[in-house]
Length: 173
Image (cartoon, rainbow, N blue to C red):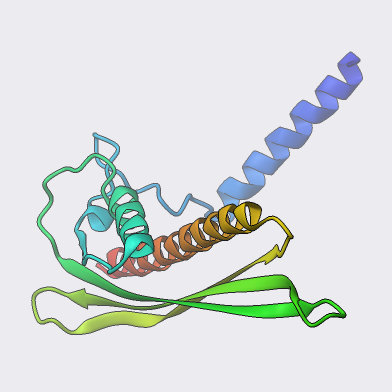
């Protein structure tokens, strides 16, 4: 890379950094204490979600909200109901499925522990699809992979919504 290209890249990065600083940009998860813990997120208690995929989602949320397992008093309780739907989205000429869609719906409610009133609630949806093959083992592994991918997507969306709410609450105080 020539010195002119390097200089152009350096000037471009400097201008980008200046532009982001001027618009008030700051990362969503930047409010951390000296140990790197966001105490607002760590104050969220996650209720156990039923079945295996619910356990995966519960663990993902708990690890995301409080990755160090610090003892922070719980101020909020998050309850989630996870529903799996599966349907054939494409068929072959002989009527058998060639593509299956796996949809997860998560109804959630974040409640204030002090008065048990919901502060935010809603539904999150994640769709993933897989091709249906002649090999049953490949179909089973593919379905399990898509289920995990969808559950992780739901967890990421839940984490983001709770973090945004807590950030708005902190900004008002």
